[in-house]
Image (cartoon, rainbow, N blue to C red):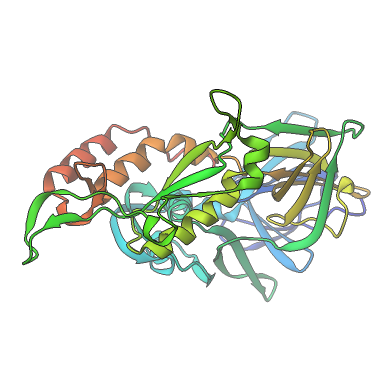
Length: 406
C-alpha cells in the first residue's frame, strides 16, 4: 500500500468491526461545498454494499458508505463510497410546513427521522419552506439552500467505532488563510471556465410588499408597492459600484458616458429600508464579479494548504485590465498515493445535482409557502386550502428523487 494512503477501518452496515480494508494503489477523495463527498479506490477484498469505511483525515474523522463495487473475475475490486450522509436517502419525511423558522429549528425537522443531530449552527436566518414526500437528505440540502448555510458532517469516534453522527451548519465553511492565485497565459495544467451569469454594476433592491388596509387594519384588497430604500439612500432605489462601472459598464447612445448594467434582488422578508439597503449592498459585492472558476493543482496557489471553502485572492493577468477577484475553494480532489496530489476548483459554486432536479419542487414549495399578490409580492396571510390542493397535485406528478445520488 502506498505510503500516504489513509488507513480504512472496515465496518459492516450494523457498525460491527470487520477489520482494515487495504487499498491497492491510489485512493481518490473528492469533495465539494454542499455536494459530493466520495472515495474511489481498488482493493483485493470485496466489501459489501452498505459497509462503512472510517478514516482519519488530519485531525478529523470521516465516514463513507460503500454504494457501488465493480468486481471483475481475476481482477481487483473497484470501490465507490459516499459520505455517510447518504444514509439519509433511506429516511422519509411525509409532510412538514416550515414557516418563519430558525435554521436550527429547520434542521430539527429535516433530521427528525434520522439518527443524525446538530453539532453546531451559526446561521441566524429565519425563513420557511415545505418538505413534502422527500427523503431526509433532500430535506437537509433544501434547508441549506433556503437558510443559506453550508453543511459539514461531524463524526465522533470512541472505543474504536463511531459514537455519534452530526452536522455542522455554517454561514461559510472554510476561512481566509492568505491564499493567492495568479492566472496568466503561461500557466499550464489550469482550466478557466467563465460562466454565463451576467455581471451587474448596480442593483435595485426590493423588500416586502404589504397588503392594503384601512385605518382599522381591515384588508382592502390589493397590495402596495414593494419596499424600497430610496428614502435612506439619497432618493435612489439602487446601489452602484463606480469602479465596476469602468470595467463592466457600457456606452450610452452617443458614446459620451458609461452607463450601468442594472440588476435586481428581492428580499421578501425585509420590512426596513435601512436593512434592505445593507442587504442590497452586500449582494452587489458578488454581482460585480464575473462568475468564473479555475481548476488548478494546489501547488499553483501561494500560501498555506487549501481547504474546502477557503477564500482565495485571484489575479487574472490574461485580461486587460486584470481581473482581481475573491473566490473560494468550492471543490477539492485529493489523490493519496506515494504522495498526496491535490487539485482544486476555485471560483463560483456550481448547482448540485439535487438543485437541478428539484427546480420544480422549489417553485411548488414557494407557492405552498406563500400566495403571490397582484403585484407578485408574497403574503403568508392569504394562503388558501385551494393552493394546498394544487401543490399536492403538482408534487405527485414530480419524478421520484429517491434514486438520485447527492
